Amino acid sequence: MHDALAGHAPLGAPRAGDAASEREQSGLRGAERGVLRELSEANAAYEARFGHVFLACATGRSADALLAALRERLPNDAATEAGVVREELRRINELRLDRLLGTP
Image 1: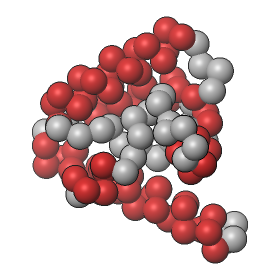
Image 2: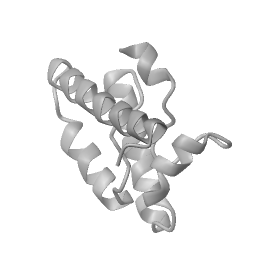
Image 3: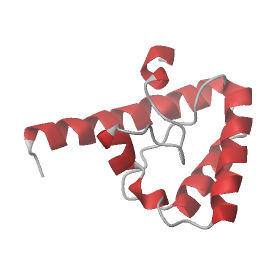
Image 4: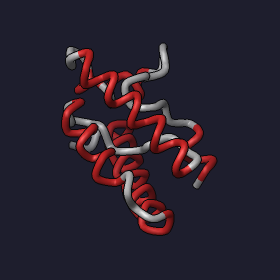
């Protein structure tokens, strides 16, 4: 799972030139600076706790919603969080495949 996470940019910091990353994180555009700062700080806390980037299917979600999800998941134990991450990876991959195949 660690390899799958390595390809994902942190929320609030999409990889420049990575159209998927920029598109998927488009809900963060225009977010208040304070929310983005809090998201960055919470991302750092999450990464320190679990050893990998916080992963959430960001498509269609605002910065506030993603920050709330991050805060909700931060207290999880490692096994619980691993299950949540697998589900988020599934959702992201499903959306990406649908987009590639032109599926609505």
